[in-house]
Length: 331
Image (cartoon, rainbow, N blue to C red; front, top):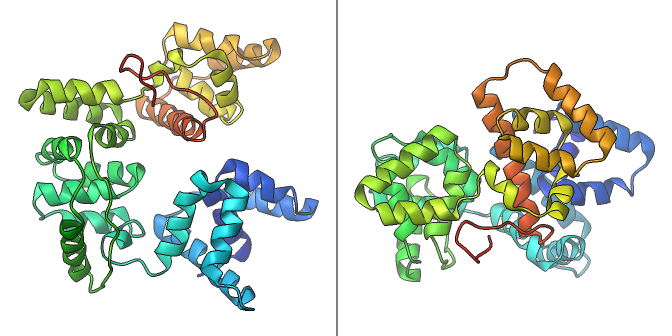
């Protein structure tokens, strides 16, 4: 890889997440932290392929150092579970260990999204729906946006109504994907799709696409459209998060992103955020909002999406509770 080693280290830290990166940095010297911090701040436009290569290089380095009677896969699993906890480590373990020899469907997670779009573009919408359900929500959202507009509602409806898939059918699809790029992989059976999966994908798309897709689905099945909408968590839904949750969220959101995101929020949500800050911090935020000029809608929406991603991560970690749209349910 052509990237400097310090940049590779920065990408690896950012792949692990903020809390884990912070924990690792505690064990480094001041100069090392300064170099890594500067590298992380300068990183931009890192592709999924570059990040995957960095992680796999890291695993390769571990393999060279853990050959004295210790299986490297087991070693990596134990280290990550010890550092992140079993639940959070699961996704990282899959990306690292499965990604080393990933082929077939699993290989799609490691490919550039545009390349995946080219592979599935001419497949039946049901096949595309299964593939999107198999991918992480952020990659699925990118892929859905790259598909022809006429097929998007059909694919999303199929995702929402998908109720798992038989292992034999999943293996057959895995073989189809394998032949597309001359690989072979035996995929695990998985519970794919459903309303929540469709909602997660929509949450990560831009607002205009969200609304257009929901309206199109509503033309065919209004009940299904309403169910998906109820499971979606939007920026305005932050009003339903309790004060402790808002305070926890603010610790992981930088001020520039917050200022931009709040320019598109209603007064109730702005007040809620300001009331959960110290008086000095709230005053500085108000000044920043007043002094900032007009912002493009796309930039505001991007900032809100970034905060929502942090919100969902904290919810997944059990740090905050999101009040779902479906009555007493939580997501």
